[in-house]
Image 1 (spheres, rainbow, N blue to C red):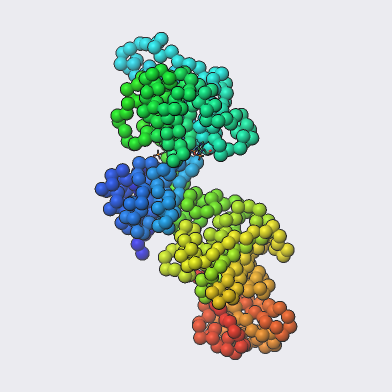
Image 2: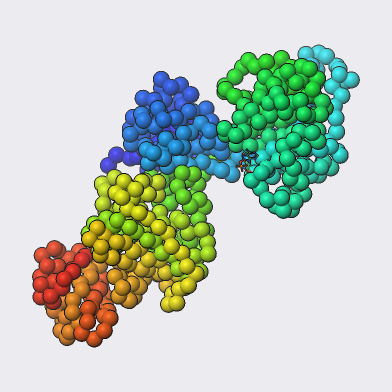
Amino acid sequence: MNKPVVLVAEELSDAGLAVLGADFEVRHTDGADRSQFLPALADVDALIVRSATQVDAEAIAHAPKLRVVARAGVGLDNVDVEAATKAGVMVVNAPTSNITSAAEHTIALILASARNVAQAHGALKNGEWKRSKYTGVELDEKVVGILGLGKIGQLVAQRLQPFGVEIIAYDPYLQPARAAAMGVRLVTLEEVLQQADFITVHLPKSKETIGLIGEREMHQVKPTVRLINVARGGIIDENALYSAIKEGRVAGAGIDVFPKEPVTDSPLFELDQVVVTPHLGASTHEAQEKAGTQVARSVKLALAGEFVPDAVNVQGGAVAEDVKPGLPLTERLGRIFTALAGEVATRLDVEVRGEIASQDVRVLELAALKGVFTDVVTDAVTYVNAPLLAKDRGTVVELVTSSESPDWRNVITVRGVLADGRTVSVSGTLSGPRQIMKLVEVNGFAMEIEPTDHLAFFTYTDRPGIVGIVGRLLGEHRVNIASMQVARGEKGGKALIALTVDSAIPDDVVEQIAAEIGSDSGRTVDLED
Ligand SMILES: NC(=O)c1ccc[n+]([C@@H]2O[C@H](COP(=O)([O-])OP(=O)(O)OC[C@H]3O[C@@H](n4cnc5c(N)ncnc54)[C@H](O)[C@@H]3O)[C@@H](O)[C@H]2O)c1
Ligand SMILES: O=C(O)[C@H](O)COP(=O)(O)O
């Protein structure tokens, strides 16, 4: 069988390649060179990039087999996540891999800018011993303004605290109490501009943040301010920064990122007050190893159709430890649902009841959909394309949660309404310390059986002799019964017989059983992959 193809379009750490292992055909290309990159996408299953490869709609259209784009780093501004989602392609990143490196690089640029390290270094190496020209400033008792107090902004704040600075931050999406707990005062953008001696940017690049620090803002800052950008080029307007430094309205800058990269000529490069690095924030051995291994793991999960905690274009995000064991159970319930229904539901409720319902359980809805469609379409069903499949087929899906679960600690139900108005439902739980999967309800009948690979359900009218008939017919056809349960509403009423068997029951045997016991519905469920 052909191995899935993983295209590595930028440098990936050896550790990352090692995680991929021998199960994949790993190819390499230069993602920054479109004439190489686009044709290389033709038959790839996964693509791994850093920030230099533009994974736009055109690239995605060149990759008909693509199932996952993995960004070995944080920023996703080079990946068209919307186009990927439309094409059913999962996008993952390595959200924490390089944050320490980026924060440390920020500190390096703050200090380098404060003490003119790069300029003095260059001068001395050029034979110039200049001391007064490179007199700097202390950090002690200065005000540092952080724009964007997210993962990196917070690490920067922690690392700056011992320098004796006052830290203020602008981040309208953060609770002031959370910032206060870090010793940071949340203020408005104007207050940062007016009060800070150093301003460091840690924002995502977005429509809102492009040019956030532009001409107008450069007129509001102290003339002694130093601006640092280790986030993304363009958040600080380069031309406005150039004029402000030239005109003495800004004292200096430390810049790691540029609006267009790579870049070797920028007006900023002529200014002695500016220290620059070529997007080195994440360029440490440690960050690259973490980014490489994290995305390689995500690629493996994604190609196996498993849930990928770092996926950015599926609902759910990171999965709580208590919720994780529910994923295979719910997926199995989805598959059993489809086998019982024999068609796609018009409406599907995924009910989560019990203790786990207090957590973020949206991923269980995805797991149910993945199961529901696994035996319906030929293509691999993933956590990304399962909701798209539901939408395409007109299935309205709802997640229902409740902390009430009278019989079990947690119960998950997949219940659907079919086109003719019939309802099909199946519920399961994880039982005991070993968290064994149990089916606890099928179409309103209570039971307790393991959802093994081969199941069968027959409804009939309650009367004596049914178990014997079913046992005899299966025995005659050499199908071994592992367990059998009978459930009924009332004596002589509608009843259900549920079986787990060691091999698939042939269709003609199902028909024979149904005919002999007068079953109006005989369904088998075969889940062996
Ligand atoms: N130079 C590098 O090598 C390097 C390395 C890693 C990350 N980065 C970049 O650093 C930036 C920050 O990364 P992170 O991991 O800390 O991201 P994050 O998402 O954890 O933090 C971003 C913060 O910005 C805030 N924010 C968003 N929009 C805002 C707005 N309009 N105004 C004010 N605040 C806003 C958010 O609330 C959040 O707290 C990203 O641009 C990322 O691409 C660069
Ligand atoms: O967003 C990021 O992760 C950083 O900017 C690092 O980008 P890189 O992987 O191209 O170094």
